[in-house]
Amino acid sequence: MRWSRVTESIWTLILPGVTLAPSPEAVLADRLRALRQAQRLTQARLARALGGAKGISVSAISSWENSSDPKLPPAGRLRAYALFCARDHSAEATPQLGREEDLNASEREKFDALYQELIGLRDAARKKPGTAAAGAGLWTFEAGPVTIICPEAPAAYRSPLADEANPNHTRMYRYADVDALIELWGHLRARNPELEDLAHKLPEEAVSPDLTGHLIVLGGIVWNDVAHQLQPLMRDLPIQQVEVPDLLNGEVFRLPDGQEFRPQWGEYERTLEKPPTKEQITADQTEDVWRDGKRRGLLEDVAFLARVPNPLNHTRTLTVCSGVYSRGVVGAVRALTDIAVRERNEAYLASRFPGGSFALLLRVPLVNGAAMSPDLEIPYNRLYEWSPDDEAVA
Image 1 (cartoon, helix red, strand yellow):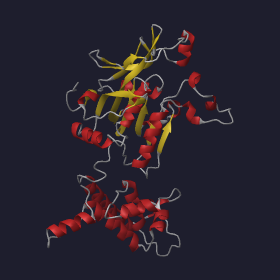
Image 2 (image 1 turned 90 degrees about the horizontal axis):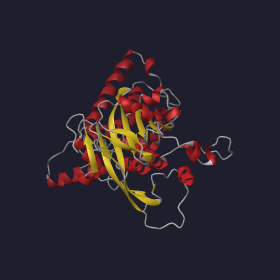
Image 3 (image 1 turned 60 degrees about the horizontal axis):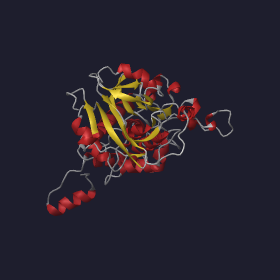
Image 4 (image 1 turned 90 degrees about the vertical axis):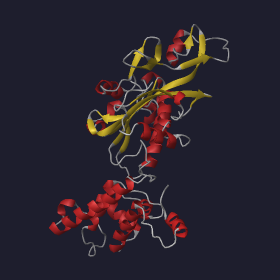
């Protein structure tokens, strides 16, 4: 339960004469407000001072100071608070943040003490059950960079607008798994409003800072070359995505014992007067849809959702959202973005994998062609589970 002034008032009525200590996040909010007021600044002026060229929204400052329903600021913002408040700005017409290396000995001592105080309050709030930070989930990051690496659609399947020579060029037409990207991008922005270094890139655009930060890889090993190159580096992970000769448009998931996880197909309900030619099937990339001249419908895809230390930098994370087909990729993402299931799924992951590293293979059923978000509390939806801390459960 989130602590608030209302909660405190209720308990005061129930237990008259008993004063309850405010929650750690409320203490932090009150402290931040007091620091601003000591500088005789409005929230707007403080937002400009702390944000520099990129700025901080006034609503962010307000949410951090709201002791009734506080939001925890990123650790980097608390460092900026400490740096700003370590100096006297009374003579400045426009207060500026300044640089840490310009602090004198007295200011340095004040900065260090204040920063440790604020971080201590933040850590206490993060450890308190029921706070927003404690349940922030897989898609909340303390600091960046956070980079989404998206697969690139083959040139033969792109819109003409993907061509840079086209006056209506639209870069996103080069991307595959755009449904998953849009779903994830919006959620990341909402969960990390102050995160400045969040980006999405194609595999060929990824550079060292992208690959050694928090990395999110969408899609399979054929269209996403970064996924292909990282897979051998995840040596402890028993799930591998592999190409098989009987599926030409997707790649299955295989365990060390040879067990494979594949999509489920059903008969196509309508009868076509004239099936397409082999050339048309190849051009449309629907070889897996057609069998013996008959069309079949995809009933269920397989999603692969994993979170492990980044093998290129173990202080950062690697998150993989993949599928045999694109619907599986969407299902992996929506397991932790869909409002209908995400809180329960986050709670399941926190309980089942307290170490934070895991890998799951999940069923993604299709209804009217749309990928449904898997509910992890339903055992049937979990095809396979792995954690480095225990034996895999199938």
